[in-house]
Length: 306
Ligand SMILES: NC(=O)c1ccc[n+]([C@@H]2O[C@H](COP(=O)([O-])OP(=O)(O)OC[C@H]3O[C@@H](n4cnc5c(N)ncnc54)[C@H](OP(=O)(O)O)[C@@H]3O)[C@@H](O)[C@H]2O)c1
Image (tube, rainbow, N blue to C red):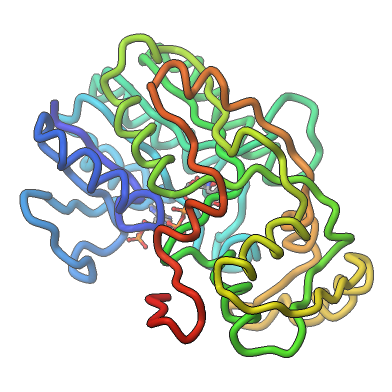
């Protein structure tokens, strides 16, 4: 099959491309806003496409049989409405535009990276946009697979790595929220393996799958596991979300701001997933957090690679 990975230059998309290359079964095309900036990968074609530009999507999806859609706006989860970097514009409208282009070009199958907790009636902007996107995908008439992962970590993520830096460099580790919020972190390698299989696994067709570790783990528990892996203990200092939102409301207008009030809500979410049907359908076992972190992190002072 000729498979297009939209967002194939991103954190998850690059791993999906790696997994699909390993199978040797598909001709791979990566969609990016700027092919000239992309680091070329052997046997992978790069095409231009921007979810805000319908004509570019029509062009990018021509001759494609399956699409993996894993696009996210830069500096997520901090939205920047003036630049069009919002859930509504990119996840919502952008996915609708991509689906329309795929239908126009007769794409047969669409694998969509959604998120944990998406369901009708949610009020947060990220849930509303993802729900809108999922609806467009499900009603498109294409075969679809919808993937809803919990928090994804890996060697070059933007979230867990912040805490790696805190543990290494700060005398205390700041944690926004109570530390009791439950998450089911999942390795990017596990996510990529599932997404790559979803491209041509008949049993996955027209289904929705949740991905995450089997057992929920609190934010404090995640920090304890991370410190154990890094071999460095630091006190955790909790900051109430409402308090952090005060400076966040001011700095959100800076270019590439590190926080906004919405981003504070996003990172303190408490969402559960049930990964059992994904484990069954794709024949995977989601790696427990400690094992997943040890696969790429080394104790501080022992030649850490990250
Ligand atoms: N990371 C997580 O923990 C997590 C958890 C659950 C769900 N997800 C979902 O997984 C998907 C991928 O996330 P990620 O973490 O891999 O994101 P990422 O690393 O930020 O990658 C985003 C990708 O989107 C592309 N992109 C950005 N703006 C675009 C636009 N206007 N038009 C077309 N492409 C555009 C970028 O490509 P160029 O810059 O090359 O154009 C890049 O390849 C998202 O839908 C996200 O909601 C992520």
